[in-house]
Image (cartoon, rainbow, N blue to C red; front, side, top):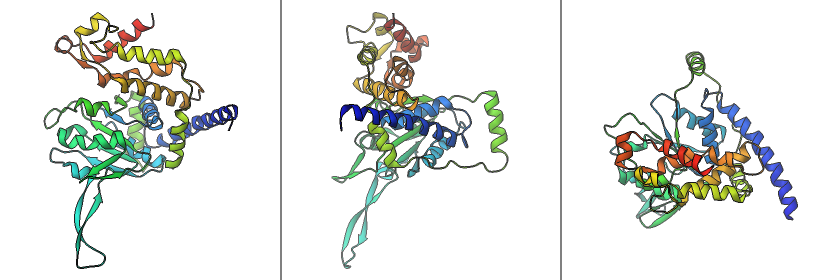
Length: 334
């Protein structure tokens, strides 16, 4: 296929993806009221091949959003309720003794855990200790799990949405930095507006509402994920993403002097990858054939917020990572 015909086909594919994205939002709108920014970021991560950490107080329909997503995408779905006594084998699966088919002999047979699904909801992930959380590391990065020296591939596409409650501290554990870095976005789910909450009250306290209709298959999603990686990115957007990530690292010369007072550890190269991949996905979902700087700007906070480790000085003075990111963006644009 010539480069020109490939470009024409990609333009048509982007147009189709844009229309499909609008249809997906309409379908999920049957059960989810508002939360347009959250949906936009979740779909951006999905088509970019990343994972999402949803943070919000109880009752904001985080779990319902994930279930609605799996219905609209016609994908297999499993929910893992993270608790302090959850074991890694409860996630990945374990070997059990079974009678062999020939009889008279017992053999070990691997029983797959709930992580073997296209969409996995890790509910209240911070309620499990680090040992259990680490069971998700290989799955999220390599899309496979290793048990007793054997490796098992996970179904494709594979997408983890984890939820975390920010207000309950008792019985919770901090997510390790390595675990946080596996998430493409940290999305803060806010309270609905007055009009949205009024619609929620009317829609959810009457007759049962209509469920989403499947729009995309797993194979469709894999095809669009390959398309996303072909969306052109101008050189200045690459440079902007790299400069932004490097300006958060106190050990580098290009990091502003004032940042060293508030940041003890900055974003790594994976943040740059996610900024570019996310910008590609966002551009295509919104019907654009090339990445613009505004696509990167829209994703800076969900990509960097959980990758910046603040100093004691910042915490004692109430300085937030969002404020640091905003100032860095302003200085880079001067």
